[in-house]
Length: 220
Image (tube, rainbow, N blue to C red; front, top):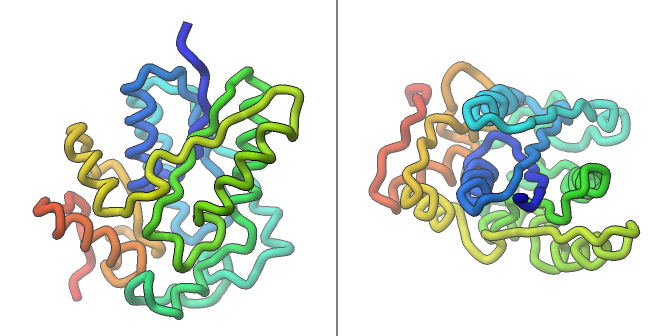
């Protein structure tokens, strides 16, 4: 019998790559997608489509109620989405306070409930500078907690913790993955904007991998 594992699956590039990596490794996967009121909720539809294609038991969980408490992020409020590279200070407005701790806590609870002992999560080094809850020290601390928070220990698995978007894409392209099935842009319009931090990082990764991005972008 295959080992059960939960995957926190947003529908973006990183979690898409992790989902397929775990799938190819033979895990019995239970992808978990969260609707936390993000402007780019279009990513949820991409996640659902991929899971349907793979025949996976996919859950989309509405946690939009948290936005009664968390309104400081441009991803979940009326603030404009900033443009530029993730390294720029203005990108800090895209931080949703404590988001990954919230998502990991729910995913760990789900894992215990279904008898899974692993939760796959897409933290990577490209996010370390802006997102505190993607840093190795956070992941390691949460892993320690996950092993003692329940009677059943759960391991948080972060295959790309010390890699960046360029390396993640390289791995995915080597697996033959179609990134036209992912959504990255923080603006959930018909086409990707090409200007937000998420788009800039994605386009940079494709360029440095000498590959063409299959997504359509708005004209400059």
